[in-house]
Amino acid sequence: MGRTNACEAQRKRIDNAKKQAKHSGKGGESQLKNNAASQTLMCSVCRQTFMCTQKKLLPSHAESVISQGVSNAQYTLR
Image (tube, rainbow, N blue to C red; front, side, top):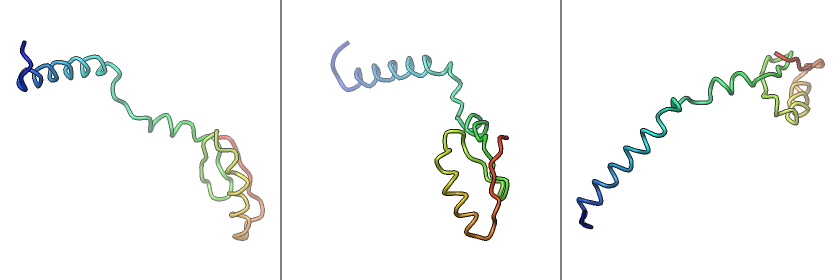
């Protein structure tokens, strides 16, 4: 094959088709289901859920809830 624009375009089409075939086996699923499943902590007052990795946010959330007049903010595992 020569180095003309048409040859380069054809080569890129073939390469992209190979990449698509290689990566199409993963399913292309988003992480929305996994993110929803990881919402394991729930505030007992406002029922807001938090990811298990966000424990540092809980005191600030409790302070903001308590400042609104609620005095018993507790967090339970879902």
